[in-house]
Image (cartoon, rainbow over all chains, first blue to last red):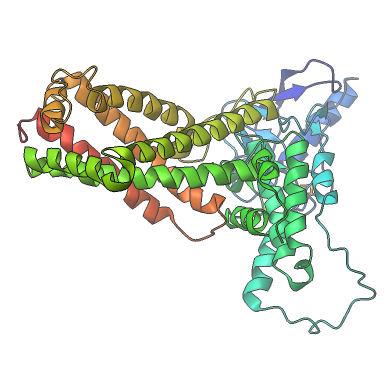
Length: 243
Length: 222
Ligand code: FES
């Protein structure tokens, strides 16, 4: 099948960018979206052109490296799916597919579809950790964790830090990301001593990095490939306000 | 352990939303009371006008006649100012947080109510200004006699365009409450499932307000 694409091309952070039209004649419906870009890039390289830069690593939907706006949806139209796990059969291919990088002040474009997401690392550095000396792994049942808490922490910990929530948020906010980390650590016993300080520091870091504030539009949870829910945002607000 | 002082809280986006939630609840309580009191119009002129006199006389011993009303007005205006200031600041932040717009961004997934919070809020604010000039001060009311609330209301809603504007505003208010009520609880840190409550509240308030101008216009209340 033939797939037509309009891809954002931008040589560097300070260069102007624009959408460029491409065609891939012999695409298969069972190709992943990244494989489609691979095929396109092979052609571009063979023709002596600069290939389309995009981030990826595991291609299994677990590392969080991939991510682009596909027809205006973060990671494309399929729910709870990363770009690397999106297949052409899931996409309407009768009209050209528009591909753009994540857009946010905190995510400057490095090249084409690659953005600098180190702002999320800075949010983590502000408090997304437990600063207790852990030594070697303790006996698993030494610290009892109620099943419900463990499940909630696991759900929040599913965040792979891909940045789709920021890309989808009408406010350009990283709150779903920050909240997932705060809820993950703040639900477990080991995270309790630093619970309030962590939430406060991470929200402040996020604000200082130029991300917008959460107004609970819900775009983030619709875009999240890991199905993180709005409940983590309530958790974050609780920890910031009441400690 | 309190980690945030008040100024630090106000400078944070979470703090601004908390302020919007608290002021929103204050305004919501007022709106519900106002809507319930409006329904006295169906009992008769004496019921509505008498209620107005009772309200002005409330706490007269301590604050003078109408004194308590002025206290309520100061609280409400303060709530509106804080609510709108935080909203404008968050909107400006959002604008700055995405300097380059998407070329393609079709219908977003969030609810219509969520997407119309900002402009809906502006519409409600404009309506309140008109409404105060119409019913409270009587400035733009065709009857406009202070204390004759019933007659003022009936006179105002004889005009189809006023009825239409009113209905438009209360639908905007309903949408605002539908997102706002659920959002406020989350902003204050509650993860409870509040969607059905928010929808019920929005429908109740909208219907309770809308029934008055419709009844007047169609002659059920004269
Ligand atoms: S490449 Fe690892 S999640 Fe997509």
